Image 1: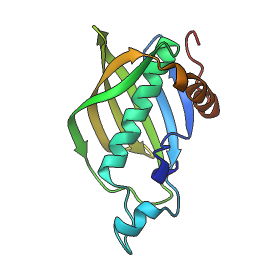
Image 2: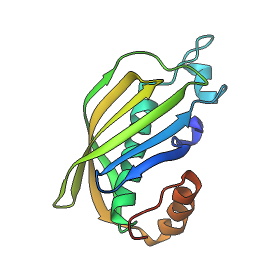
Image 3: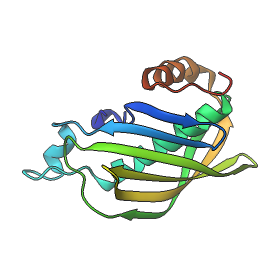
Image 4: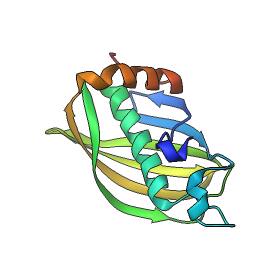
Length: 153
């Protein structure tokens, strides 16, 4: 996980196309410029970055299911709940499942846990657009780096 680059997912632990679910893992870095302001002397991962982490897990799920034919763009975050704080070096289990897809949109439910303890969850909506040709190579290398095997890439 590289917070300052919005590079949130380290590894895909499990991708289950039949169940339309993904489980990813991320380790919060020990240090990051983000922690200099959030909060000095008491570093915590901002809730917006936890939301981004859930959105990226959901996005990789959608990319895996559609074989990089459609790019998911986050449109809405609903029912986001944060239960506790996340500190540096925490190992996050980030899961997402597809709830609905159709008419150019997709909805997921995502959550983050640490050692089985719920940290946060949200319902997310994405607009599915034709995959930008200039992003294809970049996304192919990124999904390979995290260990995602798309359905039909």
